[in-house]
Length: 75
Image (cartoon, rainbow, N blue to C red; front, side, top):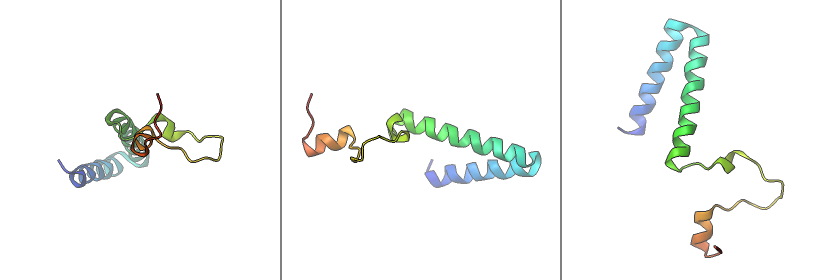
C-alpha cells in the first residue's frame, strides 16, 4: 500500500475519532499514531535513537553509513 493510502487511512481514523469521540479521542489517536510511526521508523532503520538527542559539541553528526561512503570509517 502506498504512503498516500496510509495517510488517507490515518486521516480518516483521526476524523472518526474526532467526530464520534470528541477532542480527547482525537488527541489520543493522534498521539498513538505518532508514537507508532516513530517506533516503526526505528524498527525499519530509517531513524536512529541518536537522532533525537543533541550532541554537546558543535560538530555536525555524521551517520555510520555516511562515514562508510566517505571512507572515514575505522574499526
